[in-house]
Length: 303
Image (cartoon, rainbow, N blue to C red; front, side, top):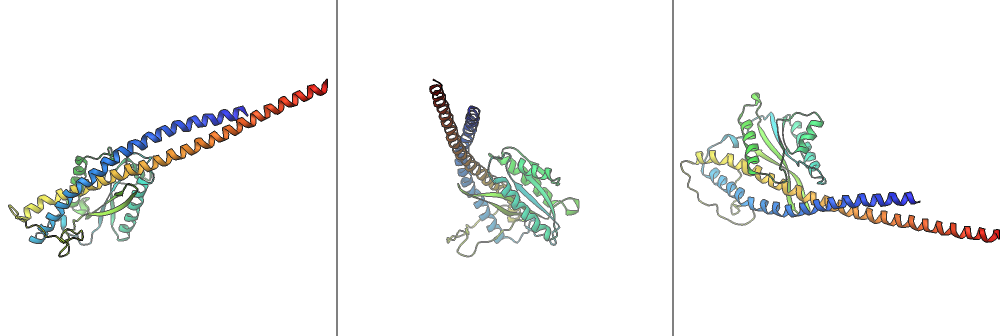
């Protein structure tokens, strides 16, 4: 009985130590996700302004850039998958990977060859474990992405998009990321990055937000074509940057929830083990009292 009590007490100490770790990780994720969420919101106006400028360019110019031109009979499709470097974030990474598998299945059903570009160690491990090929990988700082990483990814996929298919290029680019909606709601999404779809908002809704607005009248210097050629690569970088920020905020929010759940489970385990240890201790005391009473009775009868 004493050995059983020692086992329970050892488990309580072990779970308590784990609880301290999960609680610390929960607090760290909670402090970081607030900043990550504000960064996502702050990046939205820049991307929105670029989109409005591109809409104005499309309205005032008939110029067709390579990044906006649809490829007839596309044969190779690139899939950029954004995951995390670390685990302990619930189903965050698996959700993005499952969404990428669904996308890849649909693209292969269309007869397209898949070229994967991986961001985050989780995606890299997933592909290496299954011995799947991929074109490029980027790891490190998935919780706190830098604009340089967005530029690096954008330069690589734009370079491959310009390259002929027979020389290893791609005809279209999709990106799979986790969109940050709220602190408790994040969802894996697919965005077609290239060719860029410059869609004009409907009349009276130039912002695409349901509100009546007038598209600004731009004057382009030197020409609309040269401005578009300079803006489109920036737009690709901005979209990737927005996806990286949203994915980072989603990762931190998912980790906060996962660590809170782990902390709550640890508290329940400690309560259960404490109750079992108390029951074992009470049983041990009852047995000792019974032995004492029995021994006293035996002595009395022997006299």
